[in-house]
Image (tube, rainbow, N blue to C red):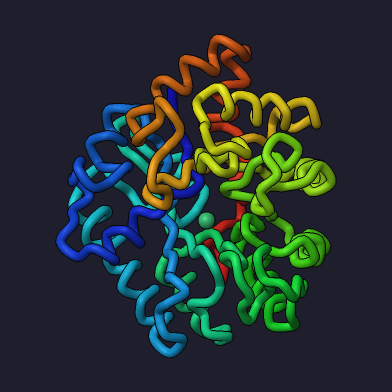
Length: 313
Ligand SMILES: [Zn+2]
């Protein structure tokens, strides 16, 4: 079964540990070989600049991760193809895997809109507004102030709308979420679960989930154990529970997966690395009709990739 995974932190890991290659099975939860053998079709690769990187070199760090994406992933493997437009996705050959560059947290933009345009020109096709704390666009969910979208943030979201870029609301504050929902044409939550089943602040409450469904957004169910279960002892069953719950709110066509591999110390039981997808898919097929499982694993995200993505500046 084809897999569309909306979030991983491989680039950050390779940036933090120079010398790692995308084939290093010992250190990475996602490798080229695992993608090939497990049925990957599209993988999103996040640029994530850690908070301890000094403000004035955050953009430089983002550029270094763009460089790793092209040099170590796209250029090194003939069948890894960068996706810049919807047509690129539709034209992937059977043996090819699409790779989409994303930015997790607008901190790297340093409040500079030209930096966003530059990253877009370099291929970034989804923007997570914040990580957990505040930045020039909005506050993250763990920022005590809880502020919404700034004037600068509104301009950035306007850029996303014009360019057909996903505005990713995982991590953003509650107020930021609702402000963004008012103006973002292509909202998603690339890696978040249901707060009803697991109370972590990073998860989405029912109203947020329903609003995303209503706006035809997608929610990438994530494998982060502390977002799956309050006691963190998560397994594949817990992922199914979150999927089932989102379905109960009417989200059958709005559920995807955003694993967060290489952003987590350990995956849930049975999902230590990308190869574990096989077990997850088999478990999904026991519980849901095949058509729905295809939707969760690939079609829902793929179909909703904006038609005008990447077509204008
Ligand atoms: Zn994240």
